[in-house]
Image (cartoon, rainbow, N blue to C red; front, side):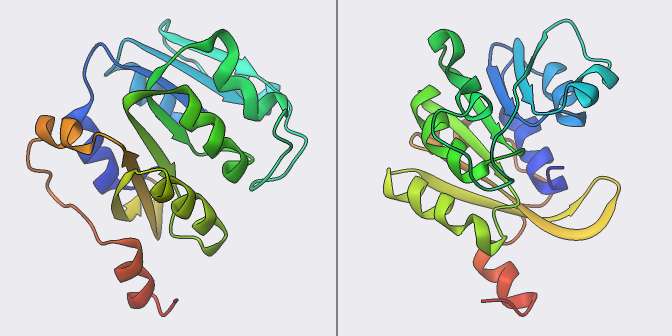
Length: 190
């Protein structure tokens, strides 16, 4: 689940015409669908996908993942699900399986001025994704705080090569949150 500060910021910048792709579906699928033109979601569990009641503007893809939460083969059906149909997305959420392996494919499928939303970016295992995206010229904003239905702190980060486009749309959020680095220091991590 995304952090409250990230939810607040995304609510301020999403446009009705945006097209979203999600790695991992759930509450975010319905939330995005209420704000954008279309959402395409992939999940590795057919049972989970069937259990959700989703709006008509959500397309569901089920693809098995041959890896784990961090990595899968580059040609894995789950990882490649974003490239089906060669569509470009305005927003891509990485919040499911094979997170590190999904980053390069998401980069390829993102519109030039698009936004990648990477949840749990504060976890040390996800540091390679931060480094890779920053190396490709993405600007990062961290939204650390609590999440719906959870008392645990976490961090959702957004990345764009055209962050000024997104910032130009934003009204002042109620809380911007802390950076991953500041959050780590406060939590006693380095």
